[in-house]
Image 1: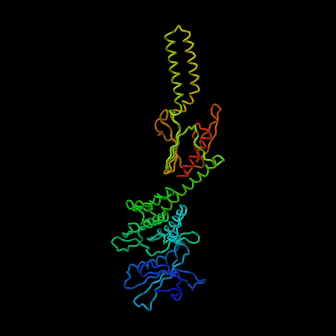
Image 2: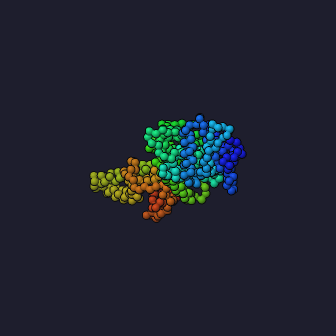
Image 3: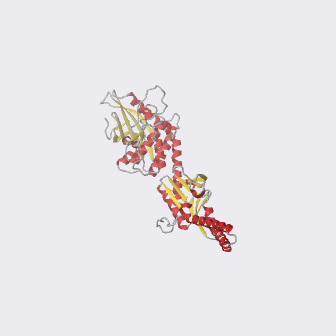
Length: 473
């Protein structure tokens, strides 16, 4: 066995044993005193004796060959490969692999110390690992790590992620009918890898399982499963799009995962860009709030109805049946009165009193109709309804298709993406009678005017509700 301060190859001084991963394996932090200044290195040692399986030696040699061929700043650099004779144990032979030492903390150590990773950190970790995998998977032949997990990921002093321990690496495609060595860690390894059919998407599964561990603080093997899918949604609070992205990474079926690390990274970046634009939109409408920070309460007289869930927000104008029934009843009663006067005038032709009453009723009715007509017209079809849908990242403006708005507004007028919104503001304009009116304007590359005959307070309240809903979503 080896001890601290022992010299190997007349060059490497062993300093601290870092771990015994399995029987016959040791990992040491050592000092290379040939280099100036002396630099720290990692030496992995494997014993070769009667108890060793040939597959272990083949994997060890493959790790050395692959590391020697790689050139990536986030992967340990190969330094040396040698055998060590043990005079006191003639039946044993040790092999050594020397690689760069990367100072930092493994993600497993961070978890054990109680560190809680936030969503922004998880996004960054995922992106950095995917960039490493893009490099590895797009080599010829592709290099598969096959053992991504928190203990094999180091966070360095600059908060950069490094992928280490290529002891399970695969550098060529397994051919049908050939024997294989089962490698990987339970919970992080997909089913196809246990069957000797690892593919680039297998590393994506391991990355997804690693993110689940960082997110929940629980090893994926200890989490419940449904139809072989890891269940981790309960008790976490992050963006639903990011949850779906992780779930796609950890699909049991290869066909349902991302095809490549490049595709997974593109999808992640697209979702994050959308979230960033949504945050910018939320920040922009904050400036439209009243100068004091008091949350606006719903106005006592309101011309709109809000319906909202975590995924959808709907804003509808009040139906005529809810606000204008008294007016319609008055107009109907007036029309009946005119018809009665007309009937009496026709029956009692000689009555001057009835004739005068009929003339007055006609004048009164049409005077009332003149003031009521704009209200009647405003309640005909084509009243505006607004829908926000977070899952589809779009908002829609729809119109009524029947008088009175009693049917669902099924006519789609326009739609645009939520992430394209630059601002939402209250717009003031002058009506045909010189009165001041307020409307809500949504601005993307074009402007959408929502004219619901609102007051300024109603407009500000609607903007506040949109902001609150987007923030909570």
